[in-house]
Amino acid sequence: MMTDHQPYHILREKFRRDYRCEPGVIAYAPGRVEVLGNHTDYNEGLVLSAAIDVGTFFACGPRRDGTFRLTAADVDETVEFLAAAPEASRAHPWANYVKGVLAGLAARQPLAHGCDAMFLGDIPLGSGLSSSAALEICAGLALARLYGIAVDPLDMARIGQAAEHRFAGVKCGLMDQISSLFGRNGTLVETDFRSLAVRNVPLGRDVCLLICNTHARHALVDGEYNRRREACEFSARYFATVLPHPVRALRDVSRQEWEAYRGGLSALMARRAIHPIGENERVMQGARLLAHNDLAGFGRLMYESHESSRTCFENSCPELDLLVEAARPIPGVLGARLSGGGFGGSVVVLTQCHAAAAAGAALAEAYGRAFGKPCDARILTPSDGAHVVMG
Image 1: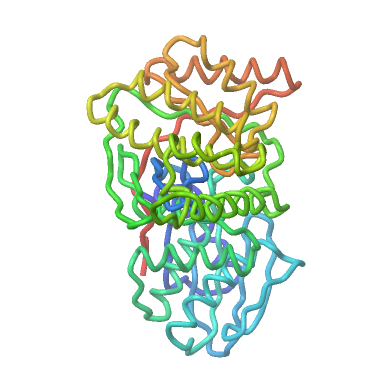
Image 2 (image 1 turned 120 degrees about the vertical axis):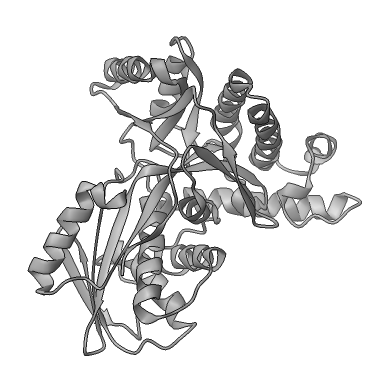
């Protein structure tokens, strides 16, 4: 149960102490790990991901005035603003995710009062496990309940995405938010980002996911993420002019068509385009392999995915590359790749459960030899998605 999580008890006690009242609502949202399908969501493609067993809690209660008071419990910082007029701020960028969600809810229904709110989680920041989406979703669920606003899960995902776009400056897709909302214990979340059809795919009892956090810099708002997205959109517009069928996104371009027409793009743009095209193929193949319990074949696709990230999309880094290569000879390891936007963060490793602890220790040691300090390695459990815990 989520109420067994230590952050839940710490948050509830701090809320009582700082605000001198009980929270009216508490919601929880997990982080996510992207297992296959990198930068495919905004290309209207396919992703296999999982909600994980670390996440964020958001507690809130009503005020009698129109003030919104928000505290980040981990750093003990508080901001205040008018609930009816949230605006992005450079002074406290962590608050922008909640402000953006509040703006999305207020667009659906006027807010009748202010709010005292506080959040705390155990997702390692900068790890590529989407602490930002977890914050957006748990804030959205809690505030929607507090203000009596009905929002279905896909619309809640869109509200979180809009918060990233308009308040945090990251033009993300919907993968992080959908993964956090639609997770189910022991399964991967397969999402078609054109139809937004979601289904849960069993991962298998004999394997688990190991996450290795490099602590390498992972700041997508610096622009690299947005530049990759712009390259994909540019390439899609090009293919729309040369292919005999409609092209709305790179989802509509096959590898064979890319081979035939890539000469009309610069070498850089062609490399950028083939990454999500190939990733869509790998997700479709990966889902078939999971259905036949071919976990070794699925692991090979993870290695292929990372190589494409490294050479075509160039969203890897030396720290991530070292871990992926170090994983290959370790007994029991089936596959490894970067997870999330890239440019730092974490590597996700598919390993047989009995070998997970030894594999994590070996990877931490290999990373320490290369970079002077071991990476953090922990076993992740595909877990249930976001929900209201109290209220």
